[in-house]
Amino acid sequence: MLFYWISTIIVFMFFGGMISIDNYKIIDYFCKDSGVSKGSPQYLPPAIPETLEQESLSIKTRIEEICEALNNKDAERASKFCVQPEIYKKTFETNVDKMPLLGEVLKNAKLTSVGAGYTYFGGRSGGLTVQVGSETYTIGMAKLDGIWYFQDL
Image 1 (cartoon, helix red, strand yellow):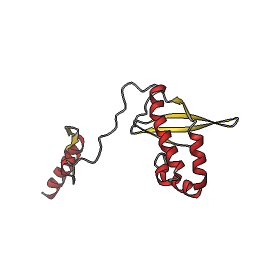
Image 2: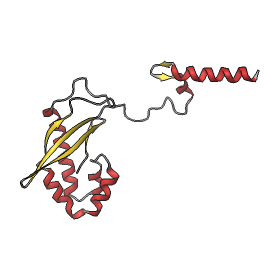
Image 3: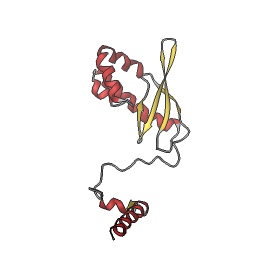
Image 4: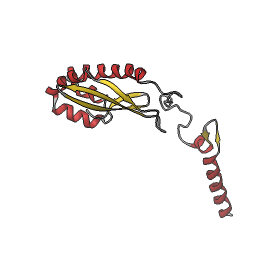
């Protein structure tokens, strides 16, 4: 008799994890806070990816924002524009005097490439070029959840 009940529960859990109603698995209804919204809706990239010119506008805004944070020597805020904020926060904090110099260099950055489309997870890559004297440097960018972040400062 005990085997019958245990096997029934296992079968219910198996099928409850597979069958979905209104994009929720049946088993989700038994989870704590399953009906509570957990923040902003998931980012869905557009069906037709933005062109280089369209992406340039949003990246230009990001460059202006990080330049302002760098010029103000605000390591906390500047690190939030980077893919790995905790690593960049430590780097900025140890080089506070060089932050405005980086801000001046980034003011001349230009978006030169974007990925052909979005990845399976909704991300996109891009590249900035910066002219420093006679040298040209490339800075990687990543678009995550619809927001551009600096990868390689």
